[in-house]
Image (cartoon, rainbow, N blue to C red; front, side):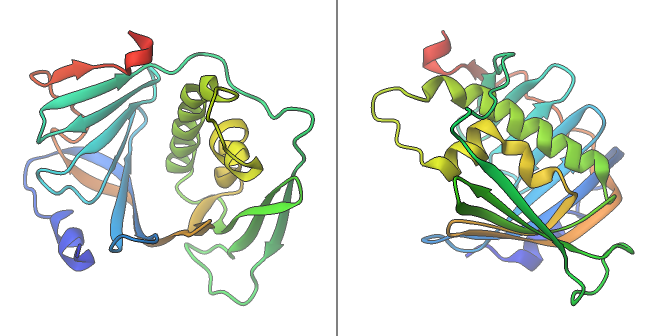
Amino acid sequence: MRKIAAVLLLLTSTVLFAGEAELLVYQVKEPGVDNYISRILVTPRYLRLDEGGEPDAGYTIFDRKEKKIFNVDPLEKTVLEMVPPAFQPVPPTEMNLKEQVTTDTDSPKVAGRQPVKIRLQANGETCRELVVVTDTLPDAVSAMKELYQALARMQYPAVGSPGYTENSCELSEYIYAPQRAFSHGLPLWDVMGGKQRMLVDFKRAFEVPDDTFVVPENFDRVQPSAWK
């Protein structure tokens, strides 16, 4: 079982610091696996997504300027390099997207802001429920929006192919409107299907080691086979 306290300790154990990044730490619960940490580090140029900086664990780097995604596997010593297509999918006319937004007056303020409840719907079905705060770590929120829009551009070519079985909610959240989850602010609590994410820590200026956003040059570079 992943130990949340131990992982958070790893976040501050390295002494080779090079700069600062915005930090988000989520505890993730999903069926069939132990709870785990999802850590997000953001600078104006990069986003890094990992599970707390464990030495041999894989991680993802998103180059916000070049719009490239790198999945790094330290054990296999490989880097999966992905360049999303330029085309950004938009919802088809038959997809009816709605959002319900209410102020969560019963919740304590976070970073001086009153949390807001968001319910995202597609074709009458509730797809995702969130509690967010506005105007908090806006660059990190923008970076997450950029990443999920880039992932949508990569996944879009598969829509309609044989065996593709995504429902309206999955199509809206992963293909046509992935930015919706980040359009109202910083998610504190996020539930979609059987997966739940809860924000357990955040910092506006977190010191990061000098190699945090480095894609290893000595690892083998691979690309999705369909793109070769």
